[in-house]
Image (cartoon, rainbow, N blue to C red; front, side, top):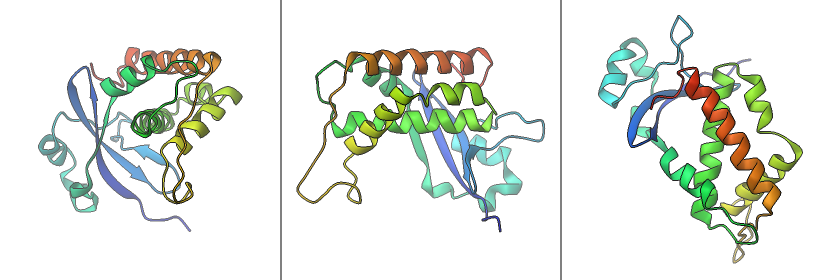
Length: 175
């Protein structure tokens, strides 16, 4: 039996400009598309509400989340070998990673999503996840700050830049 789809407004900031999407979750986490299979996006919550007036009752408008890709790219640029990342850095990078994977899944861009799941990047993902020090996964009184090796940093930067450039060139990401 399929779970009911839950929908939430989810914005992203890129180059100082906000775009609002609708994130939906049931069996897979994706963003809402229109009947023409295009990503539904708006610059403001008000505009988004007007776009999806019929579905508005099903959207949890008060639970807005936002991903700042300007901060994501800065955090990625600032990773250094043998230097530990803070909880905040891990959270920004992990949130951006999840957003990009959800967008790739939404757009059926399997090739791009797969690029983010190499053996090396899976290890980096785990480091970021544990670096968020979430209470259910971090023992009380303990914390974890991941140290990076050059190959992880190079792979993270290379693959995310490539996937992002692909999304931008195809018009999925607004400048």
